[in-house]
Image (cartoon, rainbow, N blue to C red; front, top):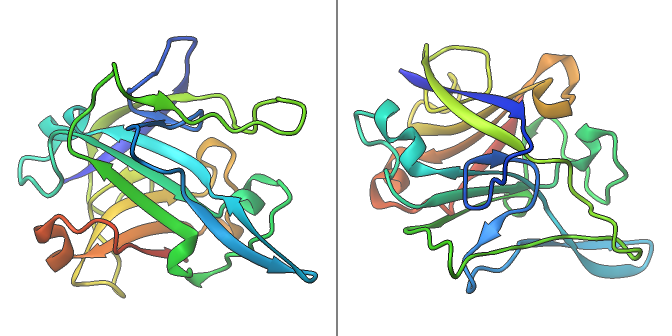
Amino acid sequence: MAIKINLEPTEAELFCSSKWWGDPDLPADMEYPLAHVEEDGESYDYPLTFLCQIDCEDIAPLDPEGLLPHQGMFYVFAGIDEYLGWGSPFHNGPGEWDRKQLVVKYTKSVNMETFRSAILVDDDDNPLTEPALKMTFEPCEDDAPCTRLLGNPGPDAPDHVNFLQIASGTAGLDFPDGEVLRVLWTAADNAKGNWKRVKACLG
């Protein structure tokens, strides 16, 4: 079974909780991921967009096989702004993305006393993030076309674990032709807990 992700607006404080959008709550030694940009003769680093953070304790009851850790926190960042209708120096189209355009981070434990929110603002100190949405989880079929964790990784990735599938229409994301974005890693890397070696595929 896979794990369906449900999203809902909330006024609750989601610090160190599972959430989509908003600001990531990071350990003090974890850096916010940047991607290098070279365009029009300029060279600079640009922050990837924070998609979500997942408290692994929330998904533990739905992962009896232990494919994912049951403690700690996952974070997902991507060069995905164009699919929100925002201006972006990145264009990540159908097919496999450059590995630097989607980053998954993981911390083994969550400490609300030492974690801090990484808040991005513009030159006028206005927030650059969408309002945070509460994430809840429920079981679903392996082939469900929804936004989900685990399940079928697709016919082109038989030896991979489908960490995250994002369906078009999720939280304002508009992928062409109803495509889905899959975040994959090999079964071997998953068994070793090597979750940095991700592959992002839109299709």
